[in-house]
Length: 200
Image 1 (cartoon, rainbow, N blue to C red):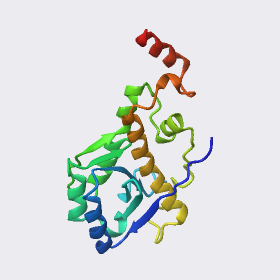
Image 2: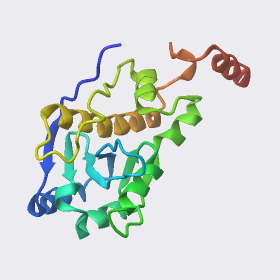
Image 3: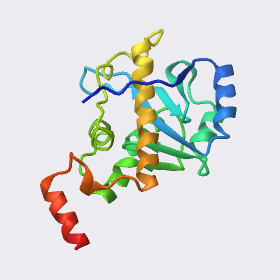
Image 4: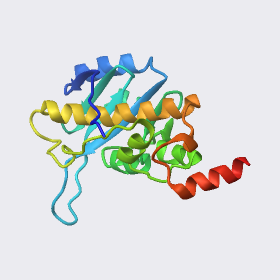
C-alpha cells in the first residue's frame, strides 16, 4: 500500500498567545479531528502526562504542546463544548490522559472505533481502519519518539497531524454513505457472507 502523506498546514502552538489565537479560530469550526501524543515510558509504572494535543480543522492541524503551555481555560472550554464535534480513536484513553492534566470533563467526542462497527469493520486500530477504507498505509515510525523534545521535528509534526486528519476523514467518509463493506477488497470472507445473508 502507498504511504499516506500529510499535505495540509501545521501550526505548532507553544505559547499562551498562540493558544488563544488558535482557539478563537477553532471555536468557529463545528467538527474537528482529534488525537494526543504522550512521551513513551520505558520504565514499568512510569506514566507521563499528555505532551501534545492535535486538532485538525479540515485544512490545518494545530499542535498544542501541552508539556509547555498546559491546558488553559480556553482549551478546557473547547474540550468540554458539546456543540463542537471532536472525532478521535479510543477517546476514553485520551480522556484518562487529559484528566491527568486537570479537572476536565470532555464532551462532544465521537469515537470512530464505535462507528466502524456499524460497517462490519472489526479492526480497531487507526492504521487498519484507514487502510480498509482508503487503501493507504499510515506510518507509525514516529510513535515512540520524544514528544517532549525542545523542538518537534518535521517528521513528528507530520505524523501527529496525520492521525488527527485521518480520524476526521474516516468520519466524513463513513457519514457520507459512500462506503459499501461488500465492495471492499479487504473484507473478511466470513463478513461478506454474513452481509450477503442479511441483505437477501
